[in-house]
Length: 319
Image 1: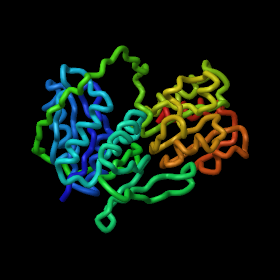
Image 2: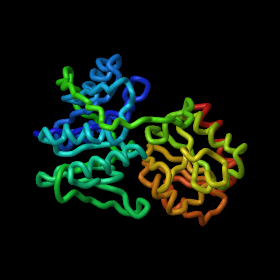
Image 3: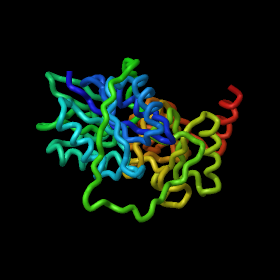
Image 4: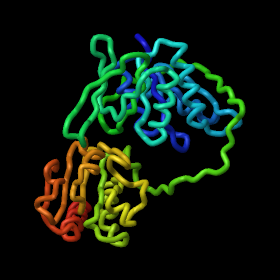
């Protein structure tokens, strides 16, 4: 069976949950193998974790001089691994960095990118993916016409797990420094808090223009904290300065697919719906009974979010 490569996603020396989902998806179309770039001190722990998540093979590389690999370097490394083996597909988390990496990798492999995928299968020996289209109103199935498909995967799309591998095979990779070597002049890290990341959270609570101000966004945060969820915002709320841009949910922001999505004061413009319509359960609170968000909501409340949300927060806290 050919290998299905997964780009392992780590943070602070541990695997992020999306890596296990990527391996589960990879197991549908090949023998799941993980490409891991990490500090040598974290190597053994991460290899064990990848095996438990289903990776039968872990291809390990240490970045030269301990510096993180730039996107071009990681694309070159992954392309080299793909070219030397029998690979059915390469799966990458669908983030800003992941999408850039996927494009670079597809060019190197003379293949194509299957973007924002939520399902994958083998059909007559061909890798076929499912992707939400037209704001999630439709689903399309597509494949590449040549080469190894590069798949960007939307997190929280499947609940499968791959069979654990007690002792995954470990292959050492060598990273060759490019000439001339790129120089990182400055790094800017987005602030992070104690809440789950948007793409990994099982519950997302988002606020829109109806929240009214940055100060009033606490009503969104309190509900999110009560259920251990992430906080999101609509583009209108971000443009109005109510919440930072990295929390924007939508076509031009982050695409999410949590178990529960709660929309407070969000009208439901097509741009926003495109980034959250694949959520398993959608709850909407809006004063306008004709708001488009109610067309896709599983549960809708026509009312003032500043009345409804605190009551919901209190009821959930009691449970």
